[in-house]
Length: 97
Image 1: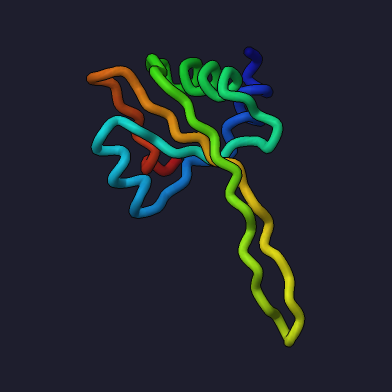
Image 2: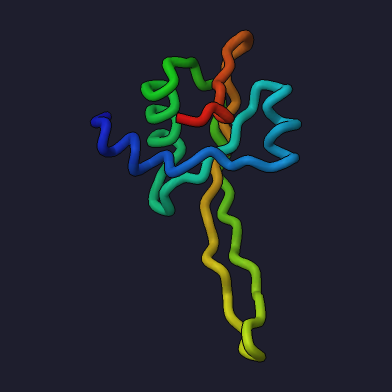
């Protein structure tokens, strides 16, 4: 998998309270490309962070309906990947460049 494809597949780590709790049990959450498959996410995480991935689950999160100036609109949805790593391996997703 090329570096360009890896960077296109993994968009960003998803930082939330739930993601922080999951990180304690060796699971990490990433926002991924809408067309990404489980195999793409597995390859991208393994090559980018040099870890062994045990399991990948994908979720399509629909955007919320919000109103702005008395008009209803939708926020953009996103696709999230829940990645479980092998025992004893970690990723530091909170590090800032």
